[in-house]
Image (tube, rainbow, N blue to C red; front, side, top):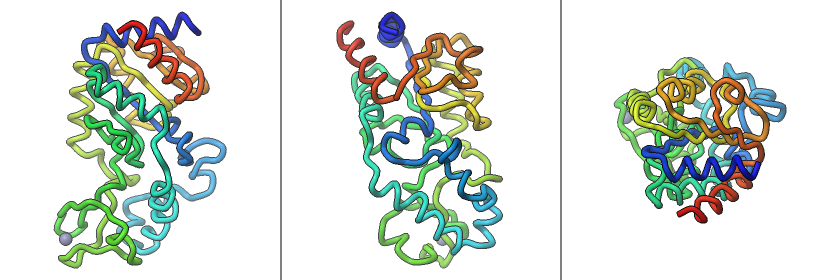
Length: 247
Ligand code: ZN
């Protein structure tokens, strides 16, 4: 493990365009339940409740559920050492872009700036009538059905099932895939399509993939070059120490 950490640290320092891809695994340590797996949301709730068609026909019920599952959980969640480590890597000029599948906004809270939120985020709302965007606030969502000044229903900027990934996120990811030479994959097992293609496509274009996960994933054997097994906070802490030694 020690050798693999030193090798990963060296690759990160020598990289020309380091990117990162994060998933639910990085936020679990901040108390945010994942969607998948044993205690995931899909084991308790019907994914059909997160179809865009359900939201559009039952906005009030959908909002009630989203407040309970997302807004209330996220309000009390704080970024953990893994989020902060990635923010520090960016501030040091090493990490150029961070792609996240998480909608919790914790990378922003930790201080990351160049973030592509591939599945959107609860931090912003869009009017389903006039398309105006605004930041989400406790006041705006305090009512049972949050509405825009035009009267339209506000929708969180998260990607519901049946919705397209926003073009800005697609372009951001495309750009990262074309440019990156080292990709750090943290806390994502590659079960969610099309996000699962990101490391595969980066690898196909010649990038080295460093993976941090508690268990082997669908990337580990075919895509990953260096697999660092363990909790994101622990592994990234040791990795950061090793990077500091080499800088
Ligand atoms: Zn509106």
